[in-house]
Length: 199
Image 1 (cartoon, rainbow, N blue to C red):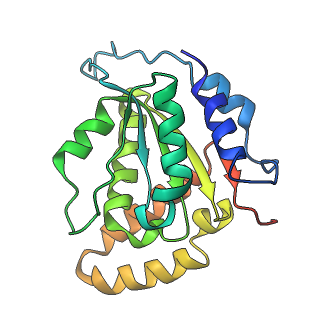
Image 2: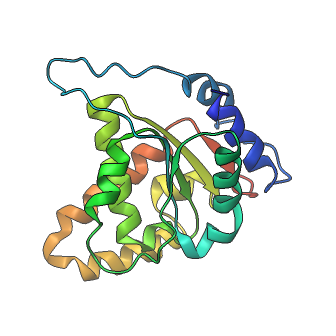
């Protein structure tokens, strides 16, 4: 299979006139995307991958832009991809989505301005990172119209989103802290910065 990392880079470039930022390690992501996951660890039961790539995204931000473009490019290369275009309503993430993450080799997280305002997206992210820890699942972040530092530190629109989340989940603040930690962890991974902003 053609390097998924390279394909991601090509797809993202078509939506950004600026080159990736220095802290976005494109070469490492491209090389790592072909890594083989060893699921024979005694502590972790073996699993069968059903999809090559799972795409996590905030529909209202990217559905008609980078997400659909990336999805089409992956399908053209016969890369089996799971993507849910349905409106993300309600508080509970569907079990089918969690299973799709678990049965994917790679998760692509498309961070955008309103990603953190969706508890659905945040739950997807937490589960994705749990799979990374447990199975060696690969996670590739794309920062689209949002700076990596804003995701990492929850600044800008992410600060606004978490101000609302802390009010909504006042009695379950541990969940909010878990989301914050997940964003920080994901923002520190090698990925693609197409924020179109300096800094």
